[in-house]
Every structure is written in structure tokens, then in C-alpha cells.
Length: 448
Image 1 (cartoon, rainbow, N blue to C red):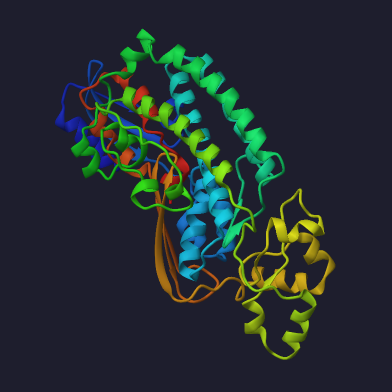
Image 2: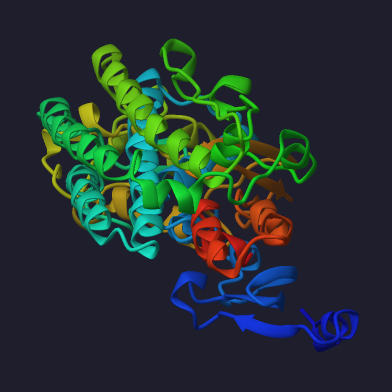
């Protein structure tokens, strides 16, 4: 916000007090500053300024290859990075005209929902802590830890996962993942039951949340809300139902909806969504088909690629499948076909292949060297997924080269922040903290 705007607030309300809240305030998450016009402790007017993390996700994405964008998608919403990975991969796959395998769809569904639970646990836990319920925060972080262990088993990382690949995923689920997942869910359900007992009927918590930060159904639609914020206002919109993707069409789950659109309803919606996410993961594990987790194409002997190349038939080779990389734990040659067969012209081969064969080395070079790599045809594509805090969309324009011409991200929490002043005007200053916590603002996706 400009200095002129701040001065205008003061001019409009002589005698009232102007207060800067944030960005150093711990509840403002480091980059957001609110200029408040107060009459006593009553918020008469507010203006919100979004700070800068200087990440420049969109412009950075236009300076590297399609594959190199993945690590930055992790950092958009670092609380649920897997969903970001898959959303971006889907958009590039749409440009390429690739349809991933059925098993990949189920793996992506299960991992997306695990990521959604970690997102909600963090949001509710941090919000409760900001209201003094530190025990709930510890319980929820403990539950999140159980899920991070699963994520680490699958991806090799906890937060910066970079698990998706264009045309598939980095690796299949590890052995016994289903059993481990169900065991962890059992612990998480017990923890959520404890937290529900501590919060849901707690008089102090209810007084701080009920009737606070109300946003009507009409206002939520006008401000382009989505996710739990929109559903808490009574609109049953969910991208997983409205525009089915992955395996959501084959899975039974409910969409929790609130009635009052206040902070308390947002809390209740997220609590119920965690149970629904666990239901989705359990069904996905039950129904998960076999087969590879990356795109399927005709196979070709790696040695034959050399012969084809000598004949100048490079284009034909690019249309075939070769044995490629599994994950960090599955480097055994026997796992190649079962774990991560892929499209030679799209997915980076395994390290073992790159280090031990000239074909693998050439394949790796071709995909990472500028001027080569993945080259979607000219065109544009938009895809959206249901992120942890709302509709997450990617819009990509291809000029036929190996570098995206334009990348645009539809960040879910941007509309919430844009409408935040409307939520808190007329409230007491103490109501700002629980209301801000309820919108689940993630600074990483705000700063494009």
C-alpha cells in the first residue's frame, strides 16, 4: 500500500488512531502488514499490504526448462507441496497431450489427500496456538509428523518433495505403504478426537471464533473464494467434484459445508475434511490398480537406440519407452519397469542408467540441456486442482521451445487476502488474529 493511502485513512478519520499491525507481528506471518484505523479497540477501517518474498515464481518459471519448474512449485504452498507438483504436471501434460497411467492417477490421489491433511493440521494447529491453545498445536504437529514420515518414505523428502514428473511420478509407493498408512491414520484419528475435545466445545475457543470474521455466500462468490473458505460460507464448490481429475470420480467422499461463514465454520469444515481425506486415501489404496506409474509407450532396447540414432531416426526413438529411473530407494535394475517406466522424451532417466550407460547419459543430457529437453507443441493450457486452501490453477503458454513462454498461477489464498479488510472492519482488534489464522494465508503463493 502506498504512503498516500495510509495518509488517506488518517485524513478520513481525524481523532482516531492509526496502527500498523505486522509484518513483524508473529500472527502476520512475516510479510503482511495491516494499516488499521481504530476507534478505541474497534476496527473502523483497514487496508492490507502484501509484502514480497522476492521469489518471482512466474518469471523464474519462464527462464528454465519445464522439468526445472517443479522445485519451485514445492515452495508455492510449502504446507501441501504435492498438490502443487501435480497441478503443474497436469498442465504440462495437457500441453503435450499425455494421459498418465491409471496407477499414477491413484498414487497422485492418495498423495494429494495426505498433503491436504498436513495442510489442515498446520492451519488449525497454528490458529489454535495463536489463541493460546498451545497443546492443540503440539498434538496437531505430532499428527503431521506421522504423515511427513509417509511422505518421506515415498518421495525421499518431507517438504521440498519434487515428487511429480511430467507423465508420471518419481517413484511408485514403497512396499507396505498401505499398511503403514492405515496405521498412521489410526493414530491421527485419535489425535483429532483429542483436539476436537479440547477445542470444539471449549467456551473460550467458541467465543473467539463463533460469529467472528463472517463472510456471506454472496460476498465469497464475488471475491472468487474457493476451498474451505468458500465451503464454510455455504457453497459446496469443490474442484474434485466440479472438474474431476486423478481418480476422484471413482471414489466416494463428502463435501463438508458450513452455514454461517464465520471462523468457527472454517474450523469445522477443515476438521471434517481431514476425515474425508483419510477416507479417500483408504479407498484409493483399496482400488489402486497395478502397472507402471508413468506414461506407457512402446518399449525399445536401449542398445537399439544407438543403432536408430546412427540411422538418423531420432524422432522414432523419442516415441518409444525405455527403462528409466525409480526413486532414491529403488535403484535396483529389477525395479525399473515396475517402478517408473517413462517416456524417453519427457522423463529424466535414473542415475544408475545415466552413470553406467552412454544411452542413459545421452538421454539425461538431452532432457536437461537448454535448447533440448521437453518441448510441448505451441499452444496454451489451463488446469486446476483442489489445493489445501482452495482452487489452485496453472496457465502455461508454449512457444514450442523447451522453456515455458508464460506461466501463471492462480493462488488460492490471494482472494482471501484481498477481502480480508472486509472481514475485520467492525470487529475488535483482538478478532484480527483468529480471523487471519482462519484464512490460511500462505505467503509463498501470494508473491508470484
